[in-house]
Length: 79
Image (cartoon, rainbow, N blue to C red; front, side):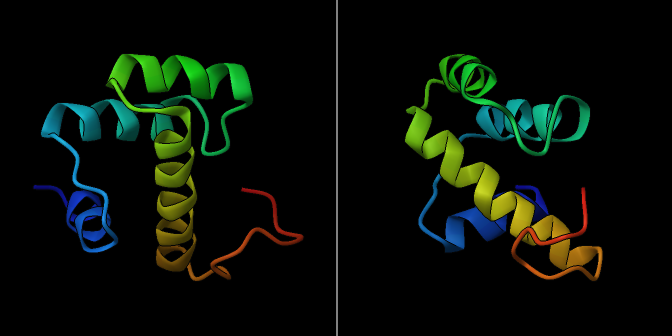
């Protein structure tokens, strides 16, 4: 399991490897902050609810910001 997959599992999100792969690909190549329509498409592709997908992006963004030395919450710095 990937590092982000391990972190998500610790936070109660148990995802399959293929779901993590799709989510990570969208996170790195499409948007760290997908709009509602994009979020809906990603959720459908992963077989997750929009709420689960939004939660994954919130948690993954906090993880990414921490790794970059930024505050965990989105502030005045643009990603």
